[in-house]
Image (cartoon, rainbow, N blue to C red):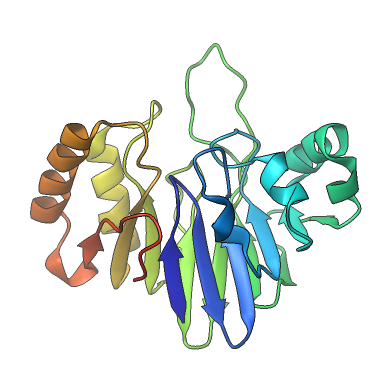
Length: 210
């Protein structure tokens, strides 16, 4: 498996000819979708969903109903190759994928409680879990956890506890455009000290591989 981090919450997983891209949003470099065979989108927020990037690719899109509705309004040509998936549903996106959980973390009580699906992806003997914007685990052991590390809806203590709870063999920082470089460094110091070493916390530069 080749795992590549792109801007903010976007990751690219390659295995055995399949190229699955998760959450290409407004902070994502267009080359993240080069050669993509499938795109997964966890929820409708623009840091995870950028219709212009989807229009520049011919890959099929797998996502939840709320995102499909946005695609129909904003990128109808993409909607023709969009498949709606439901919580708990397993599907073939070139790699085996299961949609996990169904709600975004609460941002504020006065705002809607948005839909959000994490994705559990199997690449050969490796499993990757991308939670989108939620701190709900996959309910099973995984090899790689994509860990949100900065968000208006989370405290660092919650993020670190989530990584500990999941207990993945590798923990890769995502959702990292909210903090400044200095702020990210503070979180990385905390994570390095508080996430057990066997869970391999790492922050990858954009375009870098795991």
